[in-house]
Image (tube, rainbow, N blue to C red; front, side, top):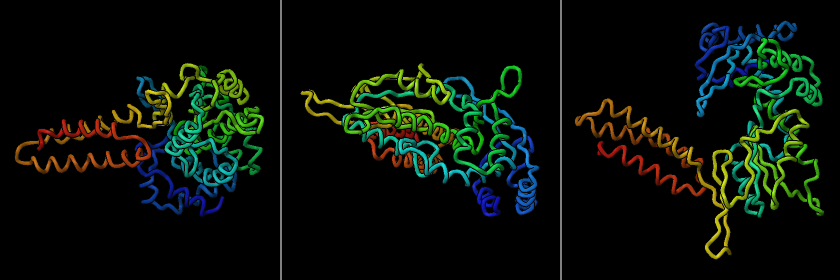
Length: 364
């Protein structure tokens, strides 16, 4: 592996990561002792084929619904090597990905995915199926993943590294044995591998003949990681989607699957879409707005900003406190407005501003 790849991977490491792996080694410690020596020793291990993935530290992260998800923390060495392999593989994989994929892709985002959904709704594809893949990260079968990887990768070192990482990061069964499935949530290369594997789903969807007599697609897939929406001018059969997922060894999450018409509205990727029909039933337009969750999150952050300032508040420092609050709120609100500026965000912004005025009233 070339020096420039390893050094670029080092520069790309997240320096804000709080937890350390089982090696307890931090970026700051390596920088103090010498980055060059650290990278040279890793390169030597790779060249002599003595490199072995370290054990993964597991931590439980709370979810919004009260449940938890397991996150894996890699050793610093594994973070670096995974980052280097990602740099090598990403351009290869990106060239093959279907245009319908927006998650974990370079220069793509949920914002762009929202514009794609909007485009198809505007063309009259107002029937939707919003789906989710059951425990997607935990369910990817290693044997099938390695099989498809070998169709694009010939380098035995990279293949052996990935296989080693898969085994160390595998979802453990109740007996503690290797389960043969799962991508480590927290692994630097995991999102890329997931996207590569789910590209089969994208390809399958394109190949199962969902076209009209002119050869144009009649059902349009937009996918963001393991969440996806299918848009059509006709009602969509969820059984067909389930069959496509079955081909790649994954399951449909039926509890999180919704089939309907855009006139009733639906959420996808942090945006809410709805077809609005006028009273006469003659004019139709597609509305895209921030979700309730997004608005409430901003209001919650604003409340925490005001509460923090209120604890040190008295009449003597009223102006300072007010200016500090407005400055910190702007750091939250300005990016939110910029992110949603392509939507009808006015009503959401008005609610947020009302919350700001209410919370800061005693400071003015």
